[in-house]
Image (cartoon, rainbow, N blue to C red; front, top):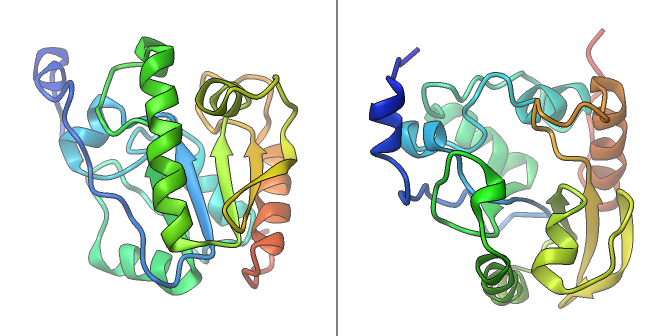
Length: 194
């Protein structure tokens, strides 16, 4: 695993990572923005303390627990695309924490996301975190679940944030919520690991 000092990671502030989107995307996960480690290794959710990748595995969306802490392998990237999973961010620029983003950045990110989703048309757009949706789209605070609004033809789901900082969500509740959204997106899920 690549090791970075705090000063080295700060050098990636404002950097971007590639979106993981294919024409086959049925479920588009949308995070706030990349963290500094993600920008450093060019992979989303690269901190091992983030529960995103283990949740995809526990939910049966992927058949393996991906370790993105050193970047994504071509095999893992291809597996995502084959499964119909895409990953993007509301704001493309990396910060140390999502709470460093301004309301204006999030609103602009919501507008840009709407344009991308309109051409991609996944079955489900899954926003990660209950505060992302209201800030980016000017909607009232919501609970994690399907929303009445759509982006183009795509259903909007708000899912619990997989960050290790989100103590309200357990591994089991994350997996259950993500699995339900994946099924709604038309993804044939695997049996959960034992």
